[in-house]
Length: 258
Length: 292
Image (cartoon, rainbow over all chains, first blue to last red):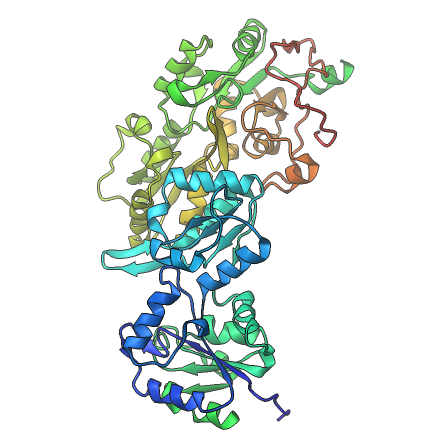
């Protein structure tokens, strides 16, 4: 086996890996403590379009996870970073609860469109406003392009269809910033000073977490909690994974590697 | 001059788009495009056959024609090929019962259609009725069907109203296609069958006809693919964005409108009555060397 570079950073998925909704995955708190005992940098990463870092932090603290706000990186953070990089003023079609993550960003006289899961904004008038901005050359930034999601009353349209509508109307392509896009992982690692080859992603979604991370050259660990039962990888896919663990608390291999 | 005569040789019939050619819709019904009332009158006085071929799906034919007559246009319902009546024929033929994602203004066109226990979705230019809730309902209907059928009245990207450019049905159709992983069937321009039915009504063969419109894909590209000639006007949704832009428009591959009218060209062939004048609908729009 070829020599592997030393692991310097660990990205950990949140919902499904560290916790499942409002309950911690059994043993995850201890696993995190052990991880902290090593010299690696840790980042907590998630696709979300409606929870600000503050919301996530509060939930994790309640579950007795020892985490600080600057260790959290979400798809909203990725969108903000891109907005700052491009130096644009976005029209924000995002859930109100996500707005705190865009604090300090100029939004008046917009020349960009950021779109997340925000059904209350997906009405004709607002989408038409966004459409006119895009037609004038404004960039379109999509938090992600999910087709639909589950609601109590059944399936509901996600942001993906509306992003597609705007792409078609303006003959442009959106920049998608959430997992499993490469930019998501590269951005998450930016603050750590580590190369992808020196990092590992731990998550429950074989496509969005592990697949996406491996695409940028990271190692991937798939845990069998959370989404795993729904998105079980095929045998062919399994061979690709660096390793498969029952859950985060049995991450001996990762610890051994550190 | 000679070039125009050549280009228009053998033309016996003219298909006219409505929105962007005759008028711009909008508040209070919209406004006629300057010069187009007279241009239509001259056309009707000529020996050419005239028919209107529209994708208008927010208003019923009756309402649309009423509006245009009020503006002074010489037009009657029987001269109009519109997508809603064409869709009704298809629904009846195939035993389809639609969930209608449409503007109330067009509901009367579907009065004879059974909409109980829907087994398909019909989507038209619903305008303000494209709320998240309405879109979601249509999506849920499609997801429940074993064999989801989505019929789209046209697939335009946008059109011009007096207040500016407006998202058209095509964008919302793409949204449902993406959400459900299906492909819609299009009734209306640029579907070849639609042009052919208009030509049949007019009694003219495609090589004897010319389509006049503002949409490079829906009007020009579609007509040319049927063997018709086409003319793109610089009114309505026409945007001069340079050759590259025009060439990359989805569906516009290979579409090149025979003449693009500007007052500097004189489409005064023996059969066509337009004479560019200050009142002509085909005004100069600045020096744009890249425009065809």
